[in-house]
Length: 503
Image (cartoon, rainbow, N blue to C red; front, side):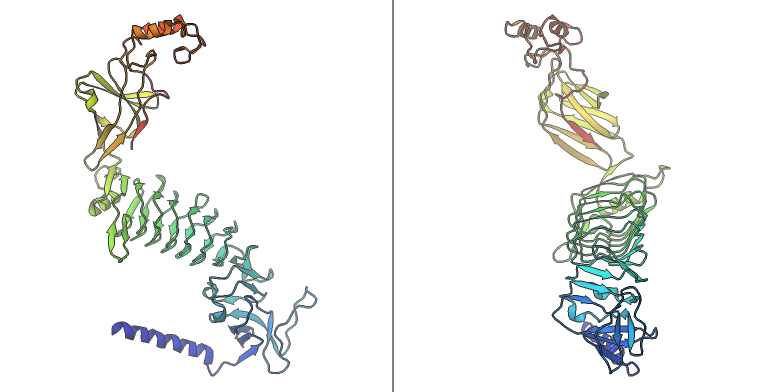
């Protein structure tokens, strides 16, 4: 019942407003062709209605006749370089009011605006079929681009991108977008924000359902407004180092958005309530830049029944403590309050590797960063543990006494807040000198080289020193102290196991 009365009240208010506009006793309305108007205080013609016609393109006339006698539909500048003078029964069109295009809300494709129009209801031009707006070059209030996008005269504010247009060009002079500037422009697929823009307005790209990418790298975006990217198809967003505020629900419903980047250089960043609600972001690294996270800012979505649910794949990597190591960070408090998986940047890792094939064998695990060996762990139980492991991407190598063999191994990374398993299938690696591939470096490898079909040939498998000939120098490498029966403590090369990321 309350809902019924609320709707009734709204209807009464709307009807009342319409009555005042359309039927006020002290306003005289005129009709010139399909244009209905009145004379405003500025002595210009204010168009309030454009009668229905078969045309999908409308050209607003320069002037309209406002007396009963000598009616004409429009007036044209005959000599094309000077304005037609005012005469007694003519008035230049200076305003187009909000209901003017009601009869064309599903058909208008192109609109032309004359010189003296200084007031328009922009919302009335949000028409799904409209593809271009043309503005007279002499207009001192509005301007249009070659593609038909509407700007202010200086082209510093983009006022309206026609909804049916697929053109994504933005004038480089633009410093701001009006609210709803691109709203429901369903043919836009990508946008590059100009360098002078510092803010994305509320609802700016609301409903741009084909928008898959937005490049803000050239701009210094400090704020993204409420519902700015509502229901877009963005898959990746880099907020840039200048970001300070992402308003409530700014990216609401971007159900393809899996990658979010908040640069380390950003400072004092605030994420509003529900800023990324409905975004299936999987991995997010946040530094100490974020100082505010609103309710359900990230990691949540609404299901088909509009019931709030939580994503299970989200992992947030950040700091537990501020730079003084005394206070817990905003991000850490948020993830703990919402039971989100967390990887701390300021924790030291304990890395454990287990593989049964090493049980009972003298084996060594090596961790490399690039070609630099960082950690060495011996084991004969098949369990290798490294404490105080720094965050990095490591190459992991396992060796037995005479070679390296590792397959189907599991790496577990643990901290106080986080535990994850990495399963990797890795390849066999033989140190230099193991020419017969039996995982050992011994006299059998020398015998292989001395075979008639190998010795003195250019067999690349046995040409260890890569001098083009398999000979004594290759045998010398095998028999050298650092190779014969070696335990594989060598630098990584292209034949080694793949990198396992820690971080």
